[in-house]
Structure formats: C-alpha cells, structure tokens
Length: 308
Image 1: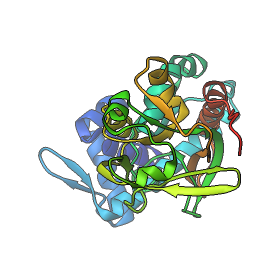
Image 2: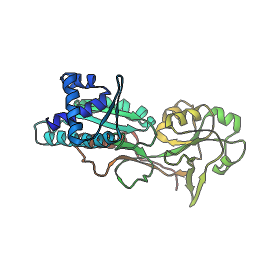
Image 3: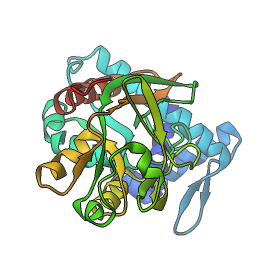
C-alpha cells in the first residue's frame, strides 16, 4: 500500500461523500479506492468510516485522522510548490469561512480579481456568522470581526471596520428621532438585537463623546445572529441598529437609512484572518490573507472625522 495514495483517497472520499465520486476525481476504479481505504484502516487498526449503501460518514477516530491528513497533504503540496517553477502561482483547495455581509458586499464582487491572480486556487467558502471549529470542521481559516477570545488560534489583523448607528425613515416616522443615545433605552424606541456568536447575548452599542463613554443596549422586538438579517431588520424599520459603515453606505445614498448620533464616536471593529496556531501558513493561505488585507484597505479605508 502506498500511504500517500491511501491518505489522499481517504480524504477525497470524505470530501466527496462517496467512494464512487472520489474514485472518479482520482481517475481510479471504485474497487481500488475501497481497497486503499480498507488497507489504511487495517494498518491503523481503527475504523475510519461508517459505510452504508447511500452514505459515508467519519467515525470519531476518522474525524481526528482526517484533520491531520488534510494538513499533511496541504504541507506536501506547499513543499512541492516552494521548490518548483510554479512558486509564484499557488494552487489547490483553500477552505475559508467568512461573515455573510463581508462575503456579499466586499469579497464576492472582487473574486474575479483573485481568480485572475491565482487561477489554480479553488476556494471553498462557507458564508456565516456562526462559530466554527477550524480543526473538526476542516477549515483552513476564518475571517472574523471583533476581538478574539480563543488564545489557541493565530490571527492576522487585516482591517478595521468603522461603525455607525442608523435607522430607516419608516422607523423614525413612527417613533421619532432620538436626540441622545440614552433615549434608546426608553419607550417608544427599539433597537435591533444582534446575538453574539460566543455567548448568545445581545451586543450593546458602545460610543463616546467629550470623554463620556456610553453602552446602550435598548429594547428589541427581534434579535438575529446574522449580519445580513440584522441589516434587513433595520431597513424594515424594526429598530435602530449599529453596523459597519460599509454595510450602510449604499442605503444612505438611496435614502433608505438615516445616520444617528453623528456627533458621537464609535469604536472600530477589528477584522482578523484566524487559523490554528499549529497550522503551516502555506502559499494559498498567505496570498489569500494578503489579498483580503489589500481589499479591505481599498474598500473600507479607516477614516472617521467625528470628534472623540
């Protein structure tokens, strides 16, 4: 048994969800793919996969082994690339997870540029605001906003997101324009609640002016855990919301949102690319991080003329 072929076949079966599909992508017969995985299981003396007539699922041992195999295969690919003539052209599969608003408004429109620069990189992009386990979910990196709590991860800061507070004209017509942030705590005003991914608590709105610092949470009738849904609720007039300025900009221009408390200054939200501390930063991940950092500097420049 060739261990490399067996590990590569095992990883492809997991990713394809079947021996038949994996064998097709590897240009081998289904029988050969099955035998390679069986030989790998015999050598390791563990069962890696639960097999039925319709599905293939990882066992607990298989999930742990798959995470290690994926990293090993990626490292081998990077080693080959680093000494070959293709060193300037990273290639292979990169699994990333990014927040939905950043994906929709910033990354997706710019992907043709990334593909033109790196045509041999295949991006598998999960789009969510959920917490993910980079190891068990087999993800190379995640793009996350806000301060990080997990010290076992490595993070590269790739941008800063200016924030603002906004409301829809329909909300202001119904509830009035709050003259001071503290008014959001009183009737008839409402905020749209954003549920933090780590603890499920409502994230307060923090701001300051002339040395005075406030944290306002307000009362809500709807709370969500997704950035696009949060923006949609605000646009629908469900309450006052605090979002990164890049999300609000198109709707400000069209008169669908109105800025509030413009004399107040809001903390910026740091943006990180996060990956496991023991993960080798290969060519694919490195160029992706560089591209995101450059894109953020271009699309979301740091500027806030308001007084502190």
